[in-house]
Length: 195
Length: 109
Image (cartoon, rainbow over all chains, first blue to last red; front, side):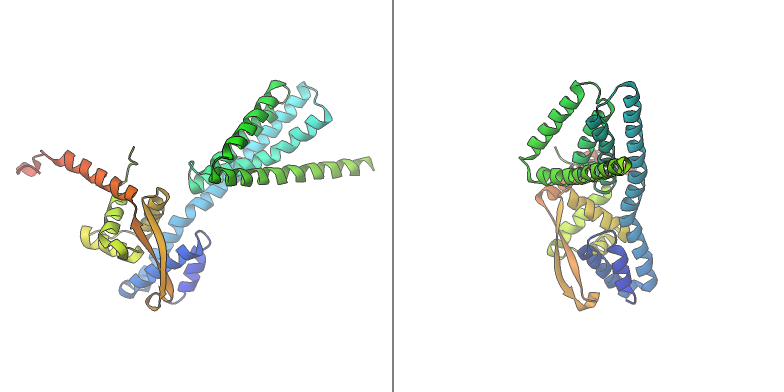
């Protein structure tokens, strides 16, 4: 089949290369009888069926994650007007919003792409929810402690299952890298402002 | 508790069971067409196969590349015990619902 390689490349944007290869091979095999038009018609069907989830998931996750992050950051900033945070609380509170935004993105995208039962999706959703509660109610002394306790319990429980361990490592890496980056940028900005 | 199977999932699982070691995308499609007279779209078929694999009702393995398919390997599917049990349970339910019914004025179904 002419340009079957192109079909394979297109399909491999959504699914693993091996699977894309096998599907295009199946279509090519059937196309010997049914013709080239059938091959491309079927290919478009398979491509759309395989691709709508990642595309729709990305759109929903980008919009939803951004919206949730903006709401959480707004809630945090409003709470700083009513309660006086220390410098550490201010820096940590504002820097939490960004890992939470990314975790919301991961949770929403994962739910669309892999379903709500996916373990990374669930972990991301759980830590995002804990982070959001901590960020919105930081001024109530018990809340950050309860959140820390729940996060530690979740972390401890995930040690007993290989998939949960890997998922936790993925989620903590994402959140940790973003938090460190944000803190570094905040420090740099404050150093520049002092000069 | 048994996981529920959709109607097309049952059709695909039964085709896989009929084909035994020779179940791959093109042959599953052809088997469904031969047995039911309906031609499933490849998009629906591969989505269903992926879903069945996610439910652990089928498992897949890659075969060897063949010249007939432009050097592309086949992805063979095999029904797992969970898949076989689920499809038998679903079909038994249909049979139970059907038994004792007098359809089109004839004898018991």
